[in-house]
Length: 77
Image 1 (spheres, rainbow, N blue to C red):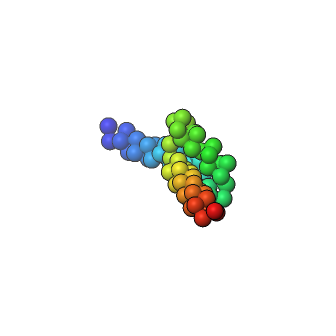
Image 2: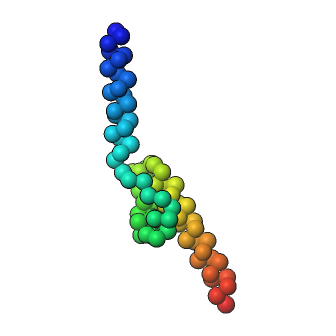
Image 3: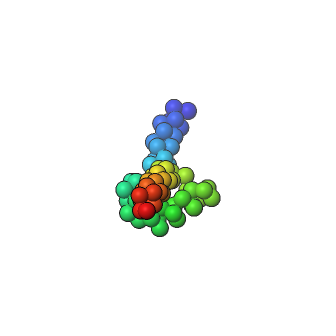
């Protein structure tokens, strides 16, 4: 019984490590500078295809972009 627990803990840790390494996490600045990718990521997140830090970072980047557009349009006239 003790041997099973000894093997189970490292195996579980390995599974978490491998599943966490599937996709690179991009920061908000990356998505601000790559709007198309931010939009694509947001669509994947909304569909449930992706659920990780990239979802939050892409969403925050799109908020920043929209805020800048709104402010620019207010002072454009």
